[in-house]
Structure formats: structure tokens, C-alpha cells
Length: 140
Image (cartoon, rainbow, N blue to C red; front, side, top):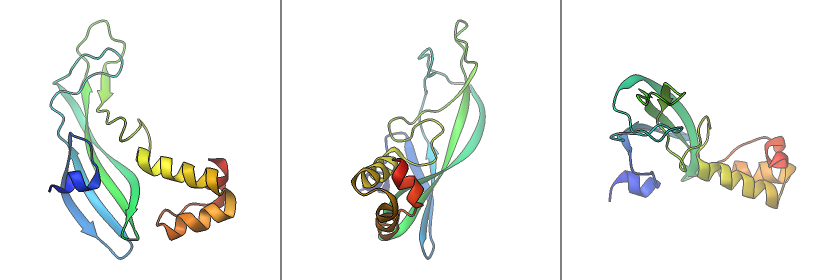
């Protein structure tokens, strides 16, 4: 079984390296999407504008925090009528645009916050390897 399937990564993401530290697992992921489409017009793109790196937090594993270093590309939208000229690859629903955590991590934090709120949520989050302040859990 591939590590991408074990981690529940969507199609189009590939693990290229990993590092296990004392309290953290860091995985480097690369997007392998063939022709991502523009989020506005839906036109598929092939011309790469640039590359960038994103850092995300995911669900903990074996009591260790999991961090993804995601290498993505920016593309040119060649559709003449589209107002967006450059766009980044989208990995929705796994990651929302501009998010710093995966969707499943956000949903877990939200569930803890709704069930416990405040200080109890912060203690439970820390125990589950998802540390956050009490304000994070009371705002969920």
C-alpha cells in the first residue's frame, strides 16, 4: 500500500520525503496534477508561472504533530475572457485556499470546540497532539 493512501492524501499529491523528529513528523509533498483548471473559468492550464511552498498542519499521528511542506505551482490562465491571469493549483476539499491546516484538521478542531469549548478543549487538543489555545476552541 502506498503511503499516500495511508495518509488519506488526494489524488495528485505525492510524498517525496519525510523526517521524523522527537515530537513532529514532517512530510514533503509535491503536486502531480497534469492540467489543473482555473478556479474562475474552469479552463485547464499548462503554462507554469512559478513555484511556491506552503506549510500545513495535519492530524497527529502516533502522538506526534504532522506537518506538510507542500510544493505547488502557479499557472497562467490563457482564456482571454477570464479576469484571472495567474492562479495556483487547488486541492479542494483536502485543503481550502489560503488555509494553514488541512480540512480534516480544521473539522476535528471545530468538533472539539463545539463539544467542549474553552480550557477543556485546549487540554483535550494537547492530549490528542493538536495543541491550540483555549481561545481557538471557544471561537469554534
